[in-house]
Image (cartoon, rainbow, N blue to C red; front, side, top):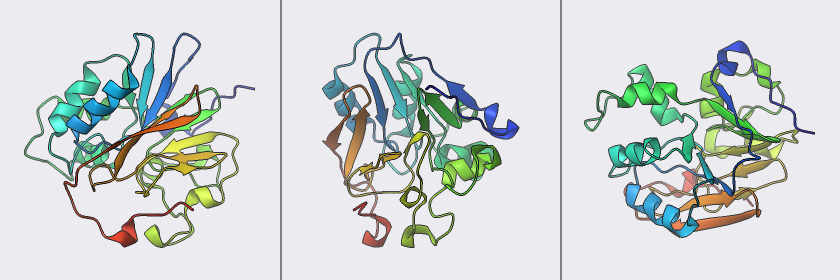
Length: 227
């Protein structure tokens, strides 16, 4: 079974489907938040070959020290692709206009898909509401989903009740270590908050992490223990 996720028109136009038979290793990477040096260390550790694929869960930028560097690193390597995160969306909408923003950056963020899928995998930044069909989700919901029937970081979180059929890889909600569930894998492990930057090896079903530096403080109440 290899069923393409079906979104409503507003999202489907921003949904990119990959056929992965021609790729070697496939990695999905958590929120980078402008931490280029940490990302470079991770990519060095992964020892990418020419036919490998790296998919980012969004939030490439903001909060860390080198957002332009991260943008350039991802844009200039055809093996690296990303969905749009809520931090890219804030810039697309004009809510945020950081000093480092260059003329082409907003256009690049606008070009990023909201969803990427392959096999039975779905990559979005925030998550999905387990009580609704994919076709009923808006772009903003896919970028910011956390506790659709709860209260933010107090939970319950969307993945607590999600039972498939797709295995959803996501970021946005900061965890002290990766979320690993049958149908949900959370990869934001607080890179910019002194945690780690995490990659999931799809072919081998294992995680790779590198230690990061603290570029911004975060309250413990906003770092989730997925256990």
